[in-house]
Image (cartoon, rainbow, N blue to C red; front, side, top):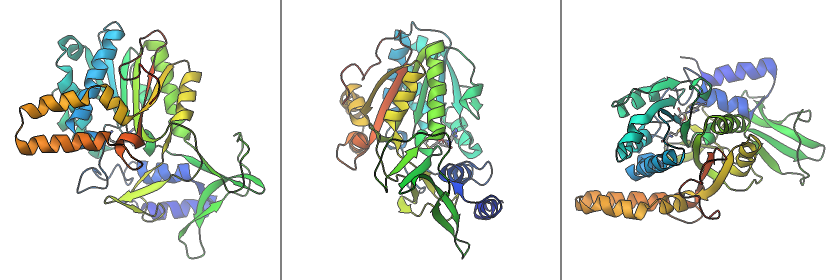
Length: 360
Ligand code: SAH
């Protein structure tokens, strides 16, 4: 198999230091040796855990959200149900199960999964074996038409660029090689072309999610043109900030992003303010972001938990309660606050459930 460290080293020797975006896209997305192509990273035995893997209630509530939005759209049939980066397919399986409460909605669904990893496509095939989804390498090939689109923890995996304000002006943060041949952080010699930056003190670092912004524009254009809604859920902040948020995680512990490329997950916080601005500029109505905790509470997570635990054994009831607690907990390091939910709809549609009141 291709050794990603060798490949990156050769590229840098030939062409000079590379940006964080190039590093991330190779390390995460290389078609045969990339992080996602080579493993199922979730769960206790993997590197990290995501909301749908913590509790079935997450996908179920999103399913009910989709059903309500679909009714607000005038109940089109078919409607494309699109998930970007479905992981193990758990959210989609939970969503489809919950969708059965509205048989006309369930019958209208035409499922499309956008996934680059062959390993995870196989997991998804097993998880949603009761429907016949179509897989895509990118959103572009999903057919036009009214859509409901979900992306949980996809945007944080998309390549970013980093820029540092130096005494000489803005410079891109790059990865080169030290004398010992090890990967080393550096700054590009020339100022970045074609990008504008605000005034900032020397030392500030800003991140630009090049791929994330392009994807959100594409989603917003579809939603505006064809009708529908998108639900973007991720780790990040509601306001643009400064600072390096690139992080590598292996076996649930932080590690050096430049060590062992392809062996650890790499993510960056999502800048929801920048995404919202991009979506608005593309003509979509933007709702939120709200925190994940508020989103789930407004969708009735407490009542859903009560209903599920009524008929469960004490052990199952305890696990369900712990999962819900973890998804909604508040505090500086808790999922309910750290994760944000942003919704995009066509301008003519009603405000979707959980976004009716002011941002929270
Ligand atoms: N949504 C899932 C998985 C999140 S991990 C969950 O919440 O559990 C990120 C997912 O996005 C993985 O399935 C990964 O293979 C996929 N992915 C990463 N980059 C992608 C890209 N550029 N296009 C489509 N899928 C991508």
